[in-house]
Amino acid sequence: MRNLLKFRGITVAEATIAILIVAILVAAAVPTYLHYVETQRLKGAAEGARVLLNLARSEALKRNISIVMQIIPGSNWCYGVTTVYFCDCNSPANCDLGQESATIYPGTTLSTTFSGVTGQSFEVVFQPDRGDATFSGTITFTGSSGRSIVVTVIKQGLVHICSDTVGGYGSC
Image (cartoon, rainbow, N blue to C red; front, side):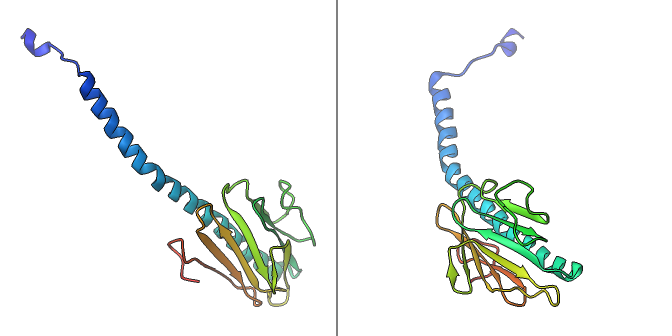
């Protein structure tokens, strides 16, 4: 009976092997996890832009006033939607219909091309009569690995998302 209750510990070699196996599994999982995090940040930023662009269009139609989406590109990017002509999307709660910034999605950059103008701050205005956008163009979100998601706005105010490097979207 006493032999059944006797406990035998593990050897140093067994503990070392177990630690090595765990370290190998962690080392293999870290790149996959980082890839996943970057993908989710890109998707969040792009989907947020799509939602706010669609909100701007629908609010222009509903309120019968022009609605402005301000976009500031770069690594410290932001975008915001407002009922007034200008809002500072880098200031918290400054855009009355919503805003997003790079602080929420670290490691992402935003670039724009609207009506031939590339890389500058831009305002897209949605008109109250048919929800048309004043300019057509693209907003591109790029991650640190170079993968990107493109949000396209056409003159009729419609929004489309595509990506050649991030799954879940149609090809650009």
